Length: 308
Image (cartoon, rainbow, N blue to C red; front, side, top):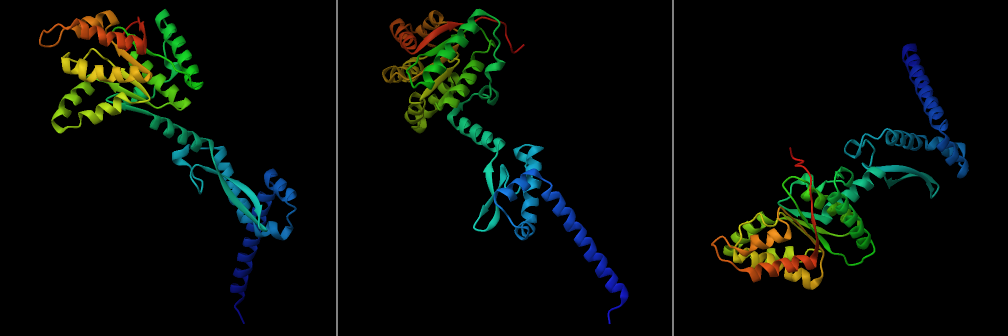
């Protein structure tokens, strides 16, 4: 015969379990979503009781989604997915749909793949349109041009690029980064290149015979943005074999090309005329400028240095 204390302990334990079960049952069946699901699928009491743990898991995860801590700290069983109740093959089952946070993350990853850069700071690639200062006529003109470009891009129409010139720190590169992000949302891949650094790499690529491959990547980009042209040292090689080759290819293929520079086109022509060795080649400089005009509409920007 069992000691009375053992029997009493077993009774207390069983009573506690029953009370826990009743609390779970009350909590689960008190949820409107669960009640609706039971009624829609005409589930018997036996089926409901057998699946209380599944219902409870569903409620727990949906509640966690309501107070979402963000994708990184998602506590759900499948991170970035939200549960959905289904009745299949005589069983209550949980299936998982992608949540808005995960969908946004996938979209952002996709956009990042569409926007590639060479020697461009990360913050430029994250520029947003609402961060663009509209404090003078030139910036308003730029925004109007960008809106026209985006509309044509969305309709798969051809469009010209922009040649943005102006003083240091007025936001020319920032505008290119913002535009690249907007084009990515439409599905157009963009390559942003800080041109002076690219030129330096091209010079060093002569010795290891990788110049042609790197040049092909840049000149054939679906949308190309050359940042700060004119800041590099001028030589016949950089002007004709690098910049000239890129512009010639893109002009013939009618490919969207954008530029930023501290020089307007007249100043750029003077800059390109004289090489670092003092040689003057006006015809070749003029040829570069004419190609830029074919590819891009020039806009001289004004404004204060935003870096200060």
